[in-house]
Image (cartoon, rainbow, N blue to C red; front, side, top):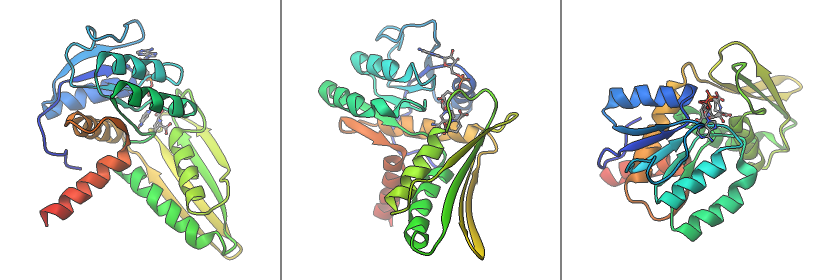
Length: 241
Ligand SMILES: NC(=O)c1ccc[n+]([C@@H]2O[C@H](COP(=O)([O-])OP(=O)(O)OC[C@H]3O[C@@H](n4cnc5c(N)ncnc54)[C@H](O)[C@@H]3O)[C@@H](O)[C@H]2O)c1
Ligand SMILES: O=C(O)C1=N[C@H](C(=O)O)CCC1
């Protein structure tokens, strides 16, 4: 995935766990300056964000909304990767608009899952009236705090958007699995399975850095998702052809 055009932003990382450390390492490889690394013991303020052009937040469900609001108050656009807080999205959206701020969220920053969302909706449109029964199995490492995964909930939303029924989700927690999602459509004499397997959480880190660079490039205030980032790349590609 190629980063959108624009200056290289100064990035603040909020949450220095598995994802924060992975993003920090990838940012160093890509020459993206990380000006602040904040964990649970740090308050998120204009000062602690240290002049960042954009913040990237990967913490835990109970912390994400407060961290996002703190970035808004500091006037720093924020990319939220934390999952398990979407019930608060309507209120947070109002806060973003009231503050004239910019927020981008995604349950999964991999290009593959975001492509899978479109394929899942299209598959549901075709299979929903053909007697196929759907089920989703998500598998993650044993340290994952939330279940089902935010990605699984996004895939289930995509199936519903395609006219499918509510998809039952089975969450498996085992070993060190970065994230695997298998959407099964089963009919009496055949089965269709859509599977995304993240082999390394660097795939999420890469997408989050591309999203951060996109958001920092002077977007109109508002709430965005990874779909907006990928769509603008396609539009950009179309414009270039
Ligand atoms: N969107 C995606 O592509 C994607 C990919 C991977 C993980 N995630 C999500 O990101 C979140 C974090 O995942 P992880 O594997 O890095 O978890 P982790 O537990 O390894 O790291 C979380 C870090 O956040 C810190 N933290 C907790 N509260 C905080 C606060 N108030 N302020 C600052 N830091 C705080 C913790 O101390 C910890 O270091 C989870 O919700 C996970 O589902 C999303
Ligand atoms: O490792 C995690 O935790 C992940 N969480 C996201 C989710 O909840 O969907 C993305 C996949 C990895």
